[in-house]
Amino acid sequence: MSNKDQKIISRLLDNAKKSELNQKLAAAIYCGNKLPSLNINSHRNKFGKEIKSSGHCEIACLYDIFPEIFKANLTNYVSPRTKFKPNNLTLYVVRYLKTGKNYCGHSAPCVNCTEKIKRSGIKKIVYIDENCNIIKKQVKNYNSNFITSGYRTYSRNNVSVPS
Ligand SMILES: [Zn+2]
Image (cartoon, rainbow, N blue to C red; front, side, top):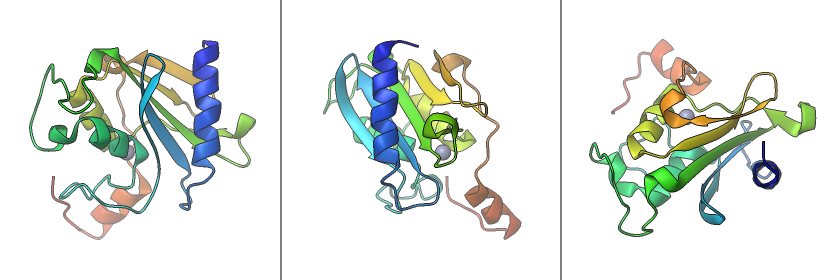
């Protein structure tokens, strides 16, 4: 793990701590040293039909940079607003845990977010695993089987959520 990654992670932990939700996560998308997007978990819902993962900060970051991804299946997409090419981007996701080692908690993106992340074409992802290790890998090698408690509640109550 590089110094730069360490710095980004501690910066994100400081931000995650400020989330008003029980799940205190923060995500950022970096392009080299530029930081086009940073978000924390929140109740906000600005994603139209995308209510399923609206509170997830990684989705908020994707929305900042690739709003069109929520409408269409795009490959090699260049955001007209930011001009950031997806394959120059790295997504960071961290969870703040008061009791965690170094205040870090498991932050691997859920199944839903993963689908969007893959579709965006973002190249690399950095997150924290169950054992508080910082993991950095190519998005194409990242797979999630993590279903959040929110979705489990939806399915227990037979609530269908638009996709
Ligand atoms: Zn998610």
